Length: 273
Image (cartoon, rainbow, N blue to C red; front, side, top):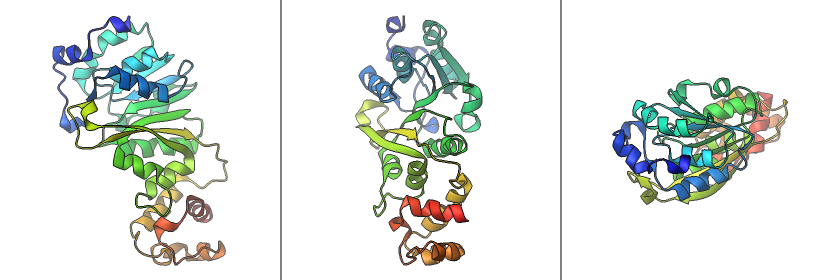
């Protein structure tokens, strides 16, 4: 039934769903691409899949075709809510649509029990904030999400997967790779979108690690990495001077800069703070 629906461009025209820059909207119409994103999420036949910013429903269609047991689409734009109704009708009860701002909603409460995966073409303007919120949930409970398959602008993706002693390495890489195995799956050129953004986009797959309860609280890691990278060109004996006793106890070379300190060392400092 899903394949019998009108093309996405007709849906956009019918409901006046012109992309709004204020909402960070850039639509993907190519079903080959959205199908590829859905495949990056792996087996979703026994999962509740959560999509952020469904828009006219391109990725939503692909996730349903890929066999999502249950799909929750969070969409802020009321025009898109109307445009998604025919897809909901064709989903045979598998699609739920929630009109809400993803920044103000607890996905775990909405999705309930069972395996959960997030698959989303995130709006560029809120992608990092949303990821940080979900990583906090993963630190509290590593089973919060089985995986997250997310689109970011390429620069943000590079910051997520960055290694120590590289220019993109910073707080986001440390927190993301502390809690998850992070892999860049593929890139998308601006021409893949309507309207074309000014940047290349990347799909990142994040799978939570099996970290133990002896790991530090999320807030400790946030605080330490913020202090270190707010003065990233200074040696950590200066930027992390409040933790000098801990660094001495751990025998850390304090002449290094923040970008040259590996993730394990930051976590060790946070564990003692």
